Length: 345
Length: 291
Image (tube, rainbow over all chains, first blue to last red; front, side, top):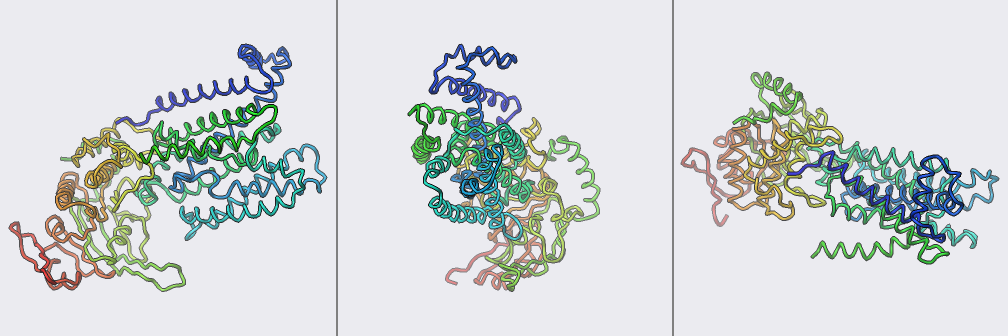
């Protein structure tokens, strides 16, 4: 018997944090403008020491443009992976991902509506810059609320009803997306299509970045407090209830927090597939099914994978950029098939 | 043998033990008082299943069997006893407390339920599964202590499944899995152990083995055991009391010798059978061939 201890949890997280740090440094190095690791390290040190004025213009460009984008990848990747892990336990479905309940489609509808409305509203530049992500987040919130009411049975969330309600809502919303896309001016369609496939090139403004950070840490912390309850939910709701889990409360809390994480991520970056589906499975294979370790491991794993995917997206066809969602899908689908075959074998 | 670790695990369980001990002297541990239930798919429809008022009592160390054909309300009664379902009328008291009103964690400390099957979404090792039984004793992220490990090991030992500790749950036989599930229930250190058809997928040897283990555990740990089963002869052999149900009605409650009457059992199970006393005085049922 080797139950999880705090020291083992911290050690595993430290290893994953070190890997994430290395990946972030490499992601800073690669791009249209090449920089040396030495120069990067030196200038990062200067930034940490508060001597930002002493860094060269090339590095300034990288630290001001590339670094915020990498941080965005970290938060979005971690959010999607935590949401995926949570939904898989909540719905007792290994195929569940953050988008299974229609949150991303809700966000897409909201974002497209915002794009359609924006030219007709006299918005200040500050408001205009956050208008589309705000529309995306509101769309996600409406979808979450609708699915919640569809998924209720006898006044409480029922996992199977929730899943069915989510799938139907997602299907309805995707039809609405197609209808709306036909009404968007053709100049906007390409940008919208990129957004639907996921992209991280639009770094949120400072206030929006704070909303994302605070939202991420609050929702992730809330989910983490339910980690040991989620372990028992894997055995079934009745069993969890008999083992002292307040199943109704946990289902509601995890549903809201995981949906909020997804809504934030989608509003900032569009629908990036496979992170929320695959990363939890890979981390489960490495670290086991204990959510007290699995949730932070998935967060680090999601961040690492998305930073790598985004680095590839902006370097493979440089100076052009590929949608990061296409990269994760191209890499994720074969990996998923491999994992499935390995399990069957 | 008393559960040595039990009283040493925490202050909360110590005070609970003291409180429970004082009650035990004057009251039966489990008291099911006129509980009834009605199920309708929606509130506008007439109930499609009802459980009529049912009562029975059980002391610590007793094994009670709930017996009856399919759809007689056995599992419903067990769920009501566990506190998971609220009865339409009546109440279930465990040491004087209404089980349905207990806070989930407290209920998990006092009542352990072994379901018909336990389907894990992702595989886990047997020891991890047994450790889940310690969940009601912790809060939030609580990491397991040395006491928890000792209790889980003890639980596995009590059901003779120590050797399964490091095996994956999806790679052990049905009988072995049933023992691990029982070990998890023991790790909860309950007052009341409820089992819903635990012998369903077991061969006859494993069934006897399981019931003997239950009998032994009830005697050693002073658990009150309530088991739902179809196995007439196992009930006759191992139960102290039988609650006989048919189509939601409680027909009789009492020791196997008073419940195992040929006419009554033939009426309930719709088959011809004979009842005779075994060498130990307990009733044995034979299904008559060709009926």
